[in-house]
Length: 211
Image (cartoon, rainbow, N blue to C red; front, side, top):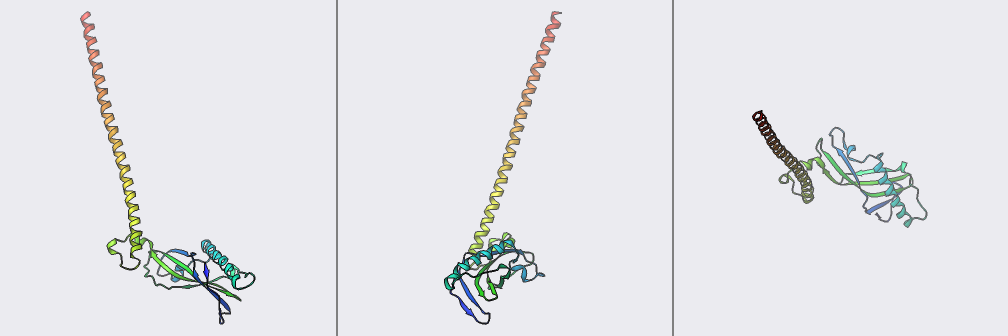
């Protein structure tokens, strides 16, 4: 995580540390409901995963903080606040499951202020993409990634169908082999019974002749 040099914000009585580069993001998965509002789109600050993400950001910030200020700052997670910025405006549909990716863009620190600013950088409908057809996908800069995601799901479903077909064919083959075995065994059994009957008849004839 790379922080820009601090900028003093007089009206907030704190420094702003812009985050120039980071690999730390947070994914929020939710099913959109029109009557709930925008709070469902932002991370739950009490979520353990989100708290762990914030702790990692604070640890990275304190490492950078010592470059510009002597000593070590103290960050109390209980005082940590968040600011959410919707830089993109996704077209949300009721009942569709979405994945939002939030990226930290700045850290405000000083006095009574400890605040992370977040920006929504990506959003995608999960089950909406699952049901889409290639011919119906919108043409945009995101289209190649949508094609890849869709083809990945289709290839997975194809492999599942092939596995089920192989299992069905194997079961059918086993059934046919069993039927063939029983047919041959039954024929052999009938032949053996016939031989026994002929033997019994022959012995009966011999006995009657000798009498």
